[in-house]
Length: 426
Image (cartoon, rainbow, N blue to C red; front, top):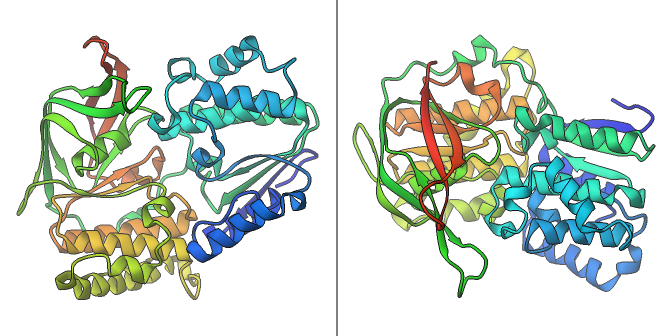
């Protein structure tokens, strides 16, 4: 779709979209998906030949953190104003206005590394708002992948702000990513009903958020989770707006963050920590290709992980072939990485497998087939599955749902917020 100042292009694979994005931003971001050799080749080109970067643009990549180069949101906004317009517009007043507009006041001086995905996305939007007076075109990759429905108005506000001033805006999206319709019943019904359950118990749970300002001298702050005991049918869907603590809770369940108190997950045959596939699997893969990921498990499980990956690929292809249309001849690299990560985690037989925003980087068709393939194989191994998403696609697939809601804390200075878990009907 294209108007005089706004254009939207759709792509079937992550690789196609990233190549188009790199071309639009004049190669300012080294590619991370093709391995370290490609990354360093791009990086050296940027360092050694900066004069080749022409026609600067304002950009927000598929992972908004990649365009936040400073240590706090306030510093990011200051830099955007100074770089694009000069000191006459980069003032405390304009920064305060942008922070208020995008809901950043509570986290304006919080370290970028400690922001949630939603807060990072809002910071990137506010940065683009600050950059507008410089008249640089705006290029965004898959904004529907990092904004919940309740925050979609912030994106529209930014786009309208640019187009009203005749500054071009380009959105590069995955096919179907902005489709809010439910999953087709025939598609959701491809996974047979399961009697697999997961018990989740939180008692006096406090999840570490790291040190607030300085890793040496800052206070070790935490987020508190209200006492909860849930009996969840798999697959379970965890929902909530941006920044409510969904991923934080998932990382604690999987032992990726330290915590105090009691946090227990137990399924039919096992208990203990779960395993997690991040939203940004490019960072999680650490530039490894799928074959290297499959070899990352101990030698006793490598054969099983490789077998599971083949089964997942076969199931994905069969599911992606629905409606009589053939899937791509070969799954793109991002999807193959996701399938390899799922295989090594299932080979470990965790108490639960958690997929955080599983549609990230995929077209809707590919995402649905990926999730269905993982659920089918996980259930065959008696491993419950939790999906974390702000998309409505998965509602008809889930057999239980939890809504995560964050509220201000009354638990002292070191407790930044409280997370409540609310069971919802399916």
